[in-house]
Image (tube, rainbow, N blue to C red; front, side):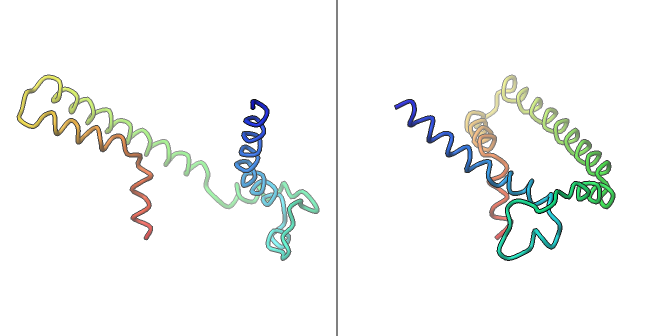
Length: 121
């Protein structure tokens, strides 16, 4: 039984890792080789200079800076608003507090990625 579980997990891990391996191998191919029909899995020649070209073309330092600023602002706003809500729910009695608290908890339990799907369609 243990061997069967391990085999299923290994097969699942290989299936999950396949797109990452495909992306890595494709990134090491030339543009012509990566769009050739029939598809080639292994590159004829490893093209490490593809990474240097991307770093030259795109401003990665700016991308990281934008990500850092966005993350810090989102965390700061979340901590501020969450602490104010927590204080209100803990210390201030008001009608409908339990229902509003349950509504807040239900919204927090839904991951943000769920709201992306309706925006695409």
